[in-house]
Amino acid sequence: MRGGVFSLLCGALLLAQDVAAQQPVSVAGFKAPTWVKRSDGSSNYACKCYPGDYCWPNHGQFQKLNNTVGGNLQVNIPPGAPCYNTFKGPLGDVQTYNEAECQKVTSNWYDEQFQIELPTAGLWTYFTNDTCRPTTTPTDTCTLGYYPVLVIMAKTTAHIQAGINFAREKNLRLVIRNTGHDFLGRSVGWGSLVINTHGFQDIKFTDRWRGSCGYTGSAVTVGAGVQAFQVLEQANAMNPPKIMVTGECATVGVAGGLVQGGGHGPLTNFYGFLADTALEFKVITADGVLKTASSKTNPDLFWALRGGGPAAFGVIVEATYKTFDDKASAGVLLDIDTTHTTNATLFWEAVRIFHGYSTHFVDNGLYVYYELGTTGQNLHVHPFVGIGKTPRELQAVLQPMFDDLDGIGITYTTSSAGFATFYDLYNTMFETEAAGNSALTGGWSIGRQDVEENHPAIITAFQTVVGAGSFMVGHMWSAGHGLPEKEWAKSAVNPRFRHVVDKLITIVPVGGNAPLADKAAAQHKLTNVVDAALRNAAPNGCAYINEADPYEPNWQEAFWGDNYAALLKLRKKFDPDGVFYAVSTPGTENWEQIETGTRLCLKL
Ligand SMILES: Cc1cc2nc3c(=O)[nH]c(=O)nc-3n(C[C@H](O)[C@H](O)[C@H](O)COP(=O)(O)OP(=O)(O)OC[C@H]3O[C@@H](n4cnc5c(N)ncnc54)[C@H](O)[C@@H]3O)c2cc1C
Ligand SMILES: *[C@@H]1O[C@H](CO)[C@@H](O)[C@H](O)[C@H]1NC(C)=O
Ligand SMILES: *[C@@H]1O[C@H](CO)[C@@H](O)[C@H](O)[C@H]1NC(C)=O
Ligand SMILES: *[C@@H]1O[C@H](CO)[C@@H](O)[C@H](O)[C@H]1NC(C)=O
Image (tube, rainbow, N blue to C red; front, top):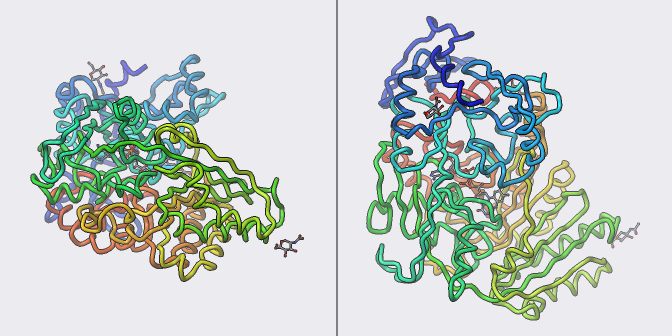
């Protein structure tokens, strides 16, 4: 089905576009020679080049790119296309129906790893515009939505360099895609060229790091496409078993968006963010040059890559992280739902008790993952984690909370287990997650001072979130607990994060193909009702760039605080022409996706 597609590029289909009306425009301070002038409302814009524009590359130029990337350039077809007779793409119609392929994509749609291995799928489908979902009605229309137009399945550093150079010279929208986990839609993009880095799968351990100064312990070097479960499995097989900081989710990549946003997980109490444990990156900057970034070489770039924002400073090809000896660990589960009480007052009293102990939990080194309101009135703590603790020691930390719960007469379901390593706990007690659903996600993080001084208001805000038909995922940890204070400033993550005790994700369900008015209402609810309640209740907190409202107000301050000014300078240094773009990352102030989130343009 893909073989015959390339011929479609020849015509460079100009369709409804009025080429004569397109004015090439140059933009002061930017090197790209080709821009498209457009206006939206009363504002004028210089836009990147899209199919149908005078500056969209021609057949020969794409063929040359394809040769440079070893034949790994593909015309992108949405994953659900085999269920449709016709894919109506920006480069022309393609006949796509294939019963066996349709069955495969239909039965695997909610499977994370299936979606991860597709060239351009977004695991949260909202930002693909949710077009072309698997269907039993093949006569329906499959369109590209916000899925990319073309994708380079990169196999070598040179392929990535070729993709960056092509996008920079032709002024195309460039998207870097690893696993597609992104909550903010940053690994898809309307009209874009994607570089898929998931093929970079090398994993190499060392007992003695000899690279940058100051650390001679054990480390692991991973390729850009490696996922947490892959490296953790190999680390665990070592003698003695090793572990590294990853997210709580085993399928997220460890060298892509996670580290560039910071990367928090169950080990954060001991070693900080994943970014704090980074020793070196191999990275290709917007000029197409492969660089080493470490505390010795390009230390400014090294700092920015450690939490300064994904897809903003370069494409990471490979990352090296500290590894640590794993420890015996204990976990406890807790559930309170309508099988325990239907009395809302009593339920929220229990939530208040649980949450009031957040500072106590993190001060005792616990990591706590919980969901609130997924089925309305329910609290699902899955799990409390005590790394280096026995079940008895963990129970002792939790006992004051259980005593208080017993004191208000609420019943609950709980269980406890001990494991030889944290890795065993991770594989047993953490739940797997599904892909293929649509929602808007946001979030806010709560500071220690907020819990200490303003706790009733925090619980009222939780009630607002759940009352709005939204729900929350909480992560209690302290990124300042185990990591010495002199290390904190070595990463670009918001300094406020060192005092956070609960990092929340908020979820507002909405279809990616819902009417535009419904989408606008959902975005409004996320920004101005749900997250606003949390922000107001926790003024000492901040927001996490990887799990946040893409349209977070005052995002510079919310995501990076005092580090923002330095990050802005570094963005101008390493990507002066805006080759990379991810919403609300340093230096994107003048960029907008106009015409209903489609064309990426500079505001003039
Ligand atoms: C189910 C789930 C659980 C999660 N749990 C956690 C958690 O416990 N802790 C946590 O901190 N976060 C967590 N996250 C958020 C996670 O940090 C982000 O989704 C992150 O962006 C994923 O990165 P990725 O590379 O795997 O995904 P992608 O979606 O492929 O990429 C994400 C972003 O990184 C950019 N990018 C990817 N690879 C590269 C590269 N090599 N060079 C430059 N830019 C690149 C992309 O352009 C995009 O902007 C979770 C997300 C999900 C969906
Ligand atoms: C790139 O080349 C490969 C190998 O020749 C081919 O299969 C593929 O269709 C080409 N890509 C495009 C977009 O034409
Ligand atoms: C995206 O979806 C909206 C409906 O939610 C629709 O109005 C719009 O045309 C779609 N755009 C594309 C490019 O698919
Ligand atoms: C609900 O719980 C609250 C708090 O314990 C209690 O005061 C109230 O009487 C209960 N209501 C009902 C209907 O049982």
